[in-house]
Image (cartoon, rainbow, N blue to C red; front, side, top):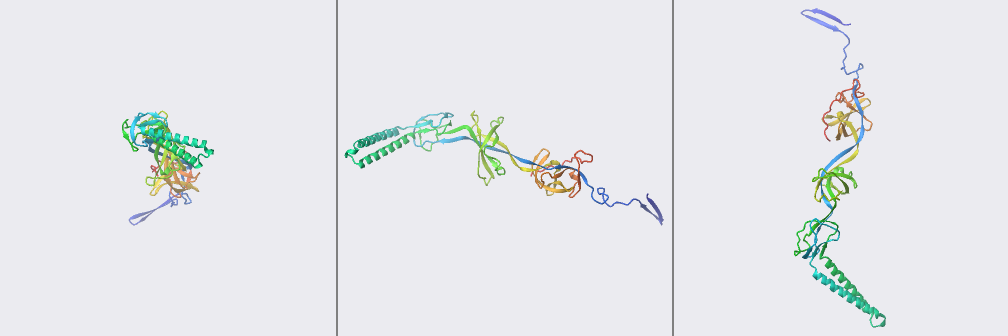
Length: 364
């Protein structure tokens, strides 16, 4: 019950009111002076592996490729291929004029025959005393020398024919019969394009996450509607110190021969990183020194700074001091301060805070 007293004092009135004892605290404080607990929706921290998508452009080369040169100089006698021909390993591509070399082989063969006949004659009379051991040794040495001369002549003759070092498709040529060429004249290119190898630069940050045997999707810019799968064959053993990248070589089959060396390909793949805490996107707040979340420890809110690694719909992977199973404030973050007592309630329960969109998470 309240009492009101009115006292007339001169020209004025003094009015005093007495009522229930006034409380010095705010509405959020309990009767004992402690801060009232804030209702929040909590969520348990789980760990998920981060993924990173890498997209680069690679250039294809043949499984084997060679620029064909002659081993010696001379006049072209025959060109034995057309551009685009498929040739087997050892197939003849070009024939140089070789009459002199053929004569040299015949002469060397005659010398071998003579040396063999002389050695055979000496051996027939070896025990008669008509021939000494020294003469027999000289005849044997002469035969060996004649055989070496024959091999040398045959080698010189073989160099007058240019052969394919491996099976593949020939390229264009500017050589015609009658032309004179030397060892620096390009005859043609030869490509084994039964499979293509794609070299591409991968960022240093994924080194160790790409291994031999991995499958990687690739798309040729010339055929964007035809996705392909390449297999990693080689990973470079060092990082380019200037560009901070390393080279990966992948291989794609080309049995139908629709792809060509030199084509460019878009290479896209994902790498899996270490497990990281996953938190709701709405739980993230931003302060002057970066992003943070409210963790719940001993019934009170405590700030945990975070670094955002990647985002998925509704969830964010972060680096933070958040162990597995820790509780964080998922809804009601705007009402929480450092040390605020919190009472976790189920989402949608009576008195549960409504979901409030947090500021957009910045990529870390």
